[in-house]
Structures are given as structure tokens and as C-alpha cells.
Image (tube, rainbow, N blue to C red; front, side):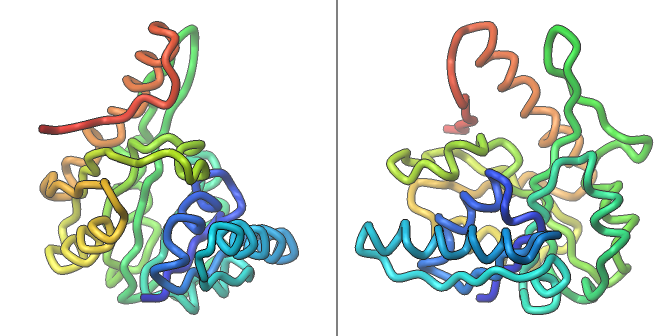
Length: 216
């Protein structure tokens, strides 16, 4: 599978490239293509140092969309609108949103747009044929990048497209110790996204780090 990562030089994008590029071809995008190339080279060298061969190349965000079968929007919510406004080519592609709209004022809180969630906001800005799936929202960015950490989390997955949801759940099964769970339609996305500020508050107020979600 070819996985395009829009915003691939941030912590989540780089971490997902490290975790996925030995299993799939990763096309790592950025507004600054040279930065994407640097991050891609670092990904390959890091995995090579662990005796793992990987496939990762740095490109522009647009090329990541063009080349990917699945597109991951590894973006802060504040950058979603401006980034998507400059891109095209999402037609008929599976698009993953791990985006959480969060604000902070003494504590973290869920701060969704008027549409009700980042996912629904994104869906309105994509072509009708784009197949949006919500996944990976509750995994801490730094844990993606730390390859010595086992990501033994549950991953809630929601979408209105059953087949696209199945593709992404199978992709999650490829990653050791992650467990995908069908969370229902896209209407559930506000609940999935709002778990992240809860986790952040638990981490801060209990002096914990990178708290995850487990459903047993």
C-alpha cells in the first residue's frame, strides 16, 4: 500500500513514517519539500540502524496526495483549512483524520468547530468521493517516534464508508500491539476526538506522561 502523509515532518507524521515504512511505501509530504526529504532520509537511516529496510521518500504535500492510496492528514487543527485549500486530488482516496481540535485555559478542553468535530469539518472540505476515516486520534505524538515504546493501545475507528474503515482497521492490525475497534459512523467522531483532551488532563494532573486508551 502507498501511504501519503500530509504534514509528514511533524511529530505524528514522522513517527507514523517510522512505524509504517517497513511495511508499506510511505510518501512523506510537507510544505517544504527539502524538509520532507531530510525527514525521510532520517527515517530510512534510523530503521537501517535497527536492521530494518524501509521505503520512504520526501515530497511536497501535493505529491503525497497524488501518490498515496491512503492519505493521512497529520496536521494540527489550526492548519487544516489552509493546507487543504492548497491541495487537490483527494477524489476516491481513503483519507485518515487523526486531528483533534483542542484548546487550553488552565486545563485542556475539546474545542470543535461549528460543524461539531474536526472530521466533519474536514469532510466538508474534501471532494464528495473522498473516503474519510477517523483513526489514531488518541496516540501521543512522541510515542509514535519512540521506537522502543510498544504502542499497546486500542484505536477507535469511525467512518461512514464500511469498506474504507475495514482497510484502515487491517492497516492498524499490521502494527504490533495496536488493536483497532469499530467505533461506528462518522457521527461518533466528536466523542473519539474529545478523548484526547481528557487524556492530556489526566497526564498533567496526575504527573503522568503520554497516557493512552485501552478497551478490554
